Image (cartoon, rainbow over all chains, first blue to last red; front, side, top):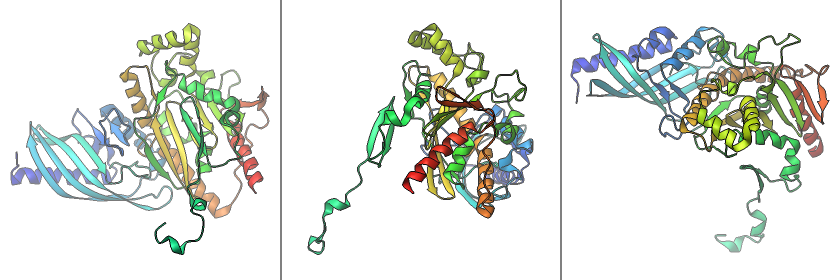
Length: 161
Length: 298
């Protein structure tokens, strides 16, 4: 089902806000964008079914909470100091079915590894968001990140992508 | 050879090199070196490290078909090896994880004289290990679950190895060992270090799935592997940042890294050097072998 202009604006604003909270390391506010049912998934190269193939990241609610707590200790050395990042989101397509917005988009993110090599890393890929509405607010049921280079060797991925 | 009239050499001189390979319990080892010893000689007593891992399966068989992650590290491969055979760093480098979750690695009472310590062993030939077994008391503690979590697995192990044999294996868990030079048996994962250039290494990892056990157990192995290893995990990225910083430091100033820790208290048992995990026994074992090989080829 296609969506109205108003719905499209609301979904786009959600994606931009989610990206900004991630880029600014506002960990809890970002985490609170997820619904009870949570899936933060960055598949590896095989692209096989979750659970049968090792993923770069495959967080349910508990594991995502662990990830955020680890970052917040200040002793997660891979993010100490946190990498400066900024990302662009484009090519947003939205479908609505079964009370859920299924949103695909493309992204490019730049990360500077200031805690080690000071390299600038380019991350690029496709986001798939499943968004639901609760109390008139959009929430993520899942966020999937298909990196274009997921089958290649990649550096540490320790900021919120 | 196209347009062969212009080439007077012997095509046979330009063929692909032939690889020598041998297998041990499903692991294939290969070399281009015709002078290399047989696999049995090469592994020596360290073959038991592979036995220990493979015998976590009641069928004595493991599978590597859950896919590989490839992690790019800006450091020399030997720096990466030093990290994984060093038992001194986890308390510091992985503090953030120990403060976040309950994990069996946590060093409680390390420096007290009575508490048992994990051990570091140098098996010779550059094969080295960190052994947590001395500190583990319950079956499956190494897997971070209670002993009654996988009853079918435990009964399958008993059927395969007998009551005592199963008990010992389920307490000790799999190996954490480096098979020289670049294969790491990382408990329920396999890791390979691929040197790319002086300052770059690709670390490959895959979960080590067991044959003859329920899918539930293998799924947990995959999930644990995701938590520990790979670019987005909770552990290795913190090692990576340390290794990369150290690489930058030695490239800048070329000072020696001190590996003398525990030289005063390591001992030799049946030809195997043993010390506590917090000493550099394993690191020295790796470098001793590296130095002897480099001296021969120099």
